[in-house]
Image 1 (tube, helix red, strand yellow):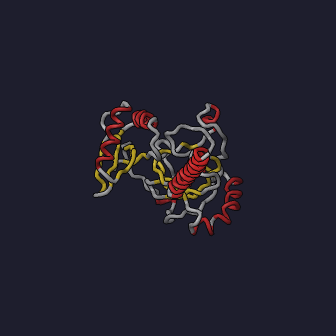
Image 2: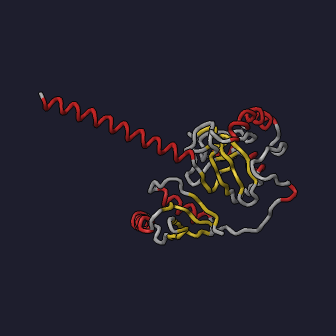
Image 3: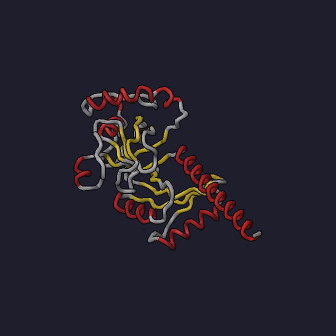
Length: 254
């Protein structure tokens, strides 16, 4: 009798513990996403990509929408072109669209043109805008109206407010730059942790020369590269992606 009671008590606490662990894990994931920031290449939508099944869903190229694999639908992101610091706000319309993991998002041609993105080297920075931010409190109220105007206008016929400093279209930044990027795998508090990650990469992938860079006394970064062509960059990115690291970034090597 006592054994049965003890078994029931043990099983009850076990279930509570599992539920609590699950809750903590979900909460941790939510906190990570709430601070989401990523630098990397985006895929500019084209109907041909849809026809070739490189993108699973269609998007209106006149809209201010993007596809993203992790962020919630209807969340807002700030998209920045690092070459000229032009920014624009877009909305995640779907997180179920399928496209290559190499790209951190799918954006419309309209967004690309608004930030003067180089379509041959579509490198952007993505920043999730917190629901508690001033932007969401004020701007979100008019975003739907703004989208309606954008969707009716020709792709190059409307100006969208930027969160950053306003840049005159005539004052384009046209600095020559070489293709030179690094893959940021992760940051670590201890050098030993970074070394363990480096060893794992060497042992479990075809990559044999990861870099450990000291950023500060409490930050050690594991990097791959540098890469001077996109083919090698993609190959290494896909290789490291098999280890299921979170939020791998591509950094411009300056």
